[in-house]
Each structure stands twice: as structure tokens, then as C-alpha cells.
Image 1 (tube, rainbow, N blue to C red):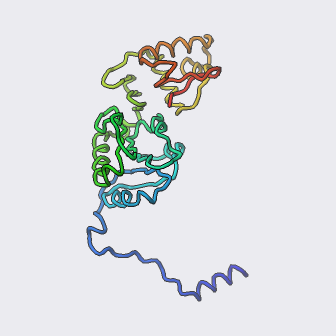
Image 2 (cartoon, rainbow, N blue to C red; image 1 turned 120 degrees about the vertical axis):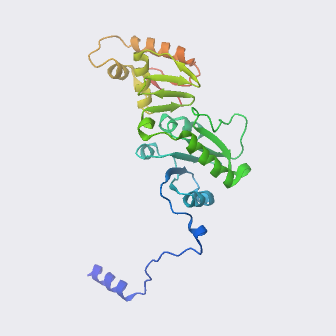
Image 3 (tube, helix red, strand yellow; image 1 turned 180 degrees about the horizontal axis):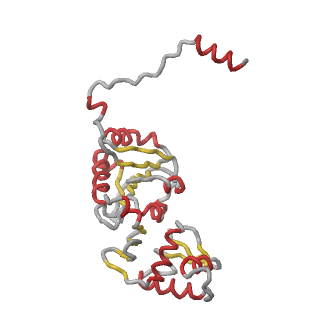
Length: 259
């Protein structure tokens, strides 16, 4: 009875159906997009970026907006670029952009001011760039977005076979590791160990879990085997265990990728 009354009420009301508003001119409508790039914008206050989001959609970018960094959701999306708003107090910290999940995708970090420590936007192995919203303006930010996408464009199949961690590139298909422009010679076991940690997405893996993944469940060696290979890998990567850049030790538990 309540449903019937509600429907009768709707029939009697003067509800105007939604009709899209025709733009005054073609420029207001943007352009017809034969192909697009997907961009995720992460900001605690997305309304403050409304001008940027509007310009992106007008320039043939598909834009998805998140209020906070949701790694589980991002892992399921095929994204070409991630924009992280660090201009205001946020749950997203600058260190979060060094997560392995984000390092195979270009990241543009919007900051209040740039300094000499900001990564170079055109380095093929450094897919992070800091750009100041207040210093550069929306037009400059749009140009940097275009440049980042241009210099990082790779076939989707190849992209899935490569993982970026800070200044390190790990190529799964070629079984090779690069730091900056230098190739690092690692053994097959060391490579598999690094890959296992990267695939864990920052989660801690115990020594036993690493042994099972790298050496197999039927390997009967001691956990010291893992420590020996981690030490060798760190030495080749010039990774200081006291101030880890790539591999962090979790005492009494195991290892994880460093933030």
C-alpha cells in the first residue's frame, strides 16, 4: 500500500525529467575524444581541484576522484597517471607515493612549493614529479601531465612486466634490475627474492614464507639462507640496512619493501 501511494504521488507531482544542457559552443563542450587516458586524482578536498578536473575532462582524459589513497581499489584499475594532492593536510603522505603499487604508474604530486629535491619529470626511471599548484598554475600542471604520459607511455603488456621502486627498475620479463642508468648483476635467486618482496606490495614476509616462494616448500635449508641472500642483494643495491631504501628488516618477523 505504501509503495502504491508513493507511486501515485510521483505520478501527480510535476517532476521535470533530466535533460542535458547543450553547451553554448564547441569550446565549452570540449572536443570529441577518439581515445583517452585514465587519470586518478587523490585529494582530501577534491572540490579545490575542480578547475583541474574540468580541464582534464575537456582534454580527453577520463578522471576518477578519490578522497584518500585506496591501494586495493587502485590495484584493480588500469590507470595511466595518478595525481596526489599534498597541498593541504592529508592522510596521504609523500612517502606513500613510493609504494611498489604506485611505482609502475606515473605519479604527479601537487605540492605548495617545489624545492631542489623534487624529482625530474622527464627521467624514464623516475616516474614521480612534484609541481606546485600555486607557483605553476593549472596550465603548467596540464603540460606536465601531458609530458609525464608521453615519456612513460609503454604497451600494457610491457607495463605489467616492469615494477618501479624509487630509482630502481625491475624487469620481470628480462629478469634484470636497474638502479638509475646502471644494470645491477643479480643471481636468479636474488632476483626471485626481490620479486617476492615486490609482489607482496609492502606486506611483511616471514623468512619461511620467502623460502617457500623462492626455494619451494620442499626445501629444508635453514632460515639463515634467506638472510645470506638478502645481505648479498643489499650489498649489490648499495642498500644500507640501518637506513633501508629498498628492503627493510622487521625484527623477529622477516622482510618487506621499504617505504
